[in-house]
Image (tube, rainbow, N blue to C red; front, side):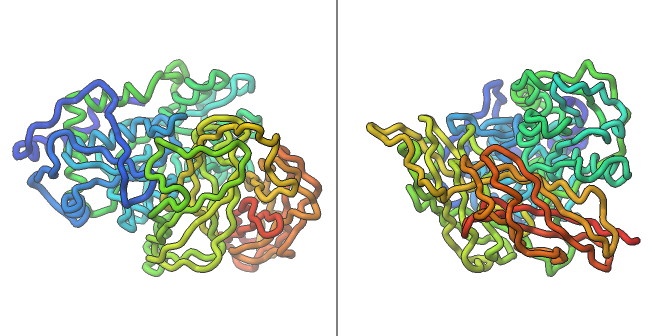
Length: 573
């Protein structure tokens, strides 16, 4: 990736005009910006940094808008980030948020002289959070080619990135300079990314690769893990992330680079001239005095792709953030705001409660539906990521009992088992809608597992109440034609620690377009933990071409293990 030496010429002119009426800019420092955790009435963990000079925001002449006025009135800039996205943002084993976007958010607050509050979302949830005014800006390595029906706008770029191909060193994959040569491999991509759009457009839609060979993940590290387990051949991602993963995993190397440039920017709602001018002014001053360059060099380390030959570039890629915004005024947006940790009242991540190893306990959060969609019983919590392996604590919640309308509050609960080994564990959970999309603020649970004296070897019940699984949609292998009989398939991995019994575990239809032959299936056979089986649904394509969705739950009794979702493109005969 390239540092921004010439990316902000217009911005610098604007900063000179605005700077003539502004107070002096605080001096930049080579040290990492310090971000402290403060109590907050907004979602967890609310990370707030105070400006370095004064308590009140600085009034700077220039354009204004409703969001910038709100920022000044509240004396707070609310920044949404996606925490599990190194090197831009991640969680250290000691519960500290770190990365380029975290440091950049803090520095923006210093330059604007306004406190910053960081809220954590999934990448898919940031667009809705902006559109429902839950956050003011989003920082998550977002390319300024992202499109959301004209409802988003972007600052000038703070990093120029490009697209790379990662593979395992033990896998005999030659250097890739022609993007179409990737069509013979199993490819992992992050949902909503430039890489996903590239693979879909130039490989799947072009008819060069079966759709089942393109696997989609909520976070890049999930794809990296699957590649390490030989379930993928290559992973497409941004170069900054590629540098990070090749640095921390010596088994990986780059086999391609430079297919599409990505200018990473601060995202905000469209038509906000005041907020955009202030963000651009702050970025411009950071560029001028070298702070932006210093932060980039601090967090985006190494260049593990410079020896690779230059690839043949693909066309300009425009990505659509998920969930995709729409111009349909009747469409609704999902949103969730954290209100209270009702289990232990925790307000930050620095002092997790102590729990005996292997003890079963319950975590409850009070939340508010801040979106415009009602939450139905098809909505449920899903584990998103954690600071270390085992941070999910074998937790599987039930679905929402009844509708939660916009503006209403409710409790969300998950039953957990403290890990068997001593240590600090932090898991992040998020609500998932009937289409399998994560949204709203991440809800966190921290625990310090401690082996108690004379503790029994295993306090978990003999008949398990906690079960989890991981699913990847793998079929149909090709788009069915109208009225065709075809199979939808998922590769389902049992990650529960228990054996699933064929007479106890089923998968059932939940929502979406209904053209399956049965609504309930038993699993094919007893399935040991850590093994993967294929779950199949027999379907008949409808009479009209188009895109259809189906959502199924894998269940044990009344407990949801995980959700299987698929999108099916039905084509004419």
